[in-house]
Length: 341
Image 1 (cartoon, rainbow, N blue to C red):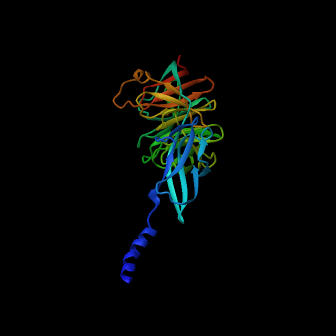
Image 2: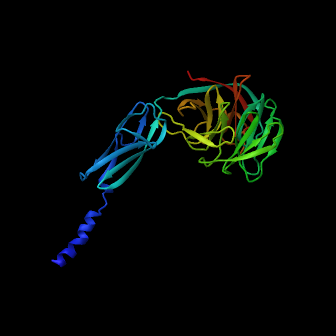
Image 3: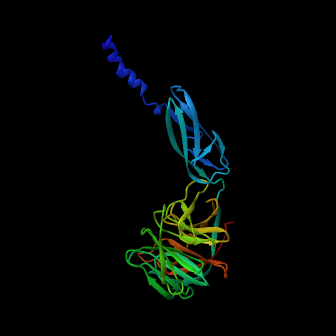
């Protein structure tokens, strides 16, 4: 009798302690887990072996939701989905990821050239912005990075400050009479006096790992980091306080680069896409409302060996025109942007 008991005990213990984690599964109403804000998310837990379930809770972005959720008010982007199952005195957690796309197809835009101006073809342009009707430019590459004030009509550099050789200069913006500049992978940005380029302070990034582009709405600063995300920064200390995810009706749009704020929208370059394009982003939702076809501009500049992509977009509020150029481009183009017919 004791022998039988000793033989059965390990089996009973194994059965009692068996892992039931794989007996449940989190099911989403679309297998590809791709939705738009016009869709309704439906979720459930499959229970393969009919275990007794005490409770099930669902969460989207760590907020409790029901099994059926209209997505019209859910922010765009990649959103974490979690199910918590209590069964047989165990807490089981199941995680997934859904993607919410825009339900708006971007409008197509084109450009008309107003003027062509000379541009320093040794400038690896990273940031471009008008301040007090003067053009400022940030250039990149380690050992060649700078911040400069430019006479846009002649291309002459009025004032220039070189960055330390360890830094790769990136985007710029002006807020409250201060000039801000990012560096690429240095995890640091700089605040300058825009009159003489004196460095007043520096600031570090937080969750964003790189610095690409900057713009502002007069109150807050917006920062791109090379992903499909744009970070909203505190205007005082440049801490990251929120973010949006830039989405079309089909994709998360990666490699958002140089930024410009115009009439409540963010205009942006995209880096190393097949075509020379800009995009128009709703800063509240992240929706890509427009795509600007800049093809043809690169062919109009001097075709030097180190010629690189379109980068740099600045709006002149007095002239109501955009100024665009590229990395090592010999020309700066003044253009008007309008919907394609």
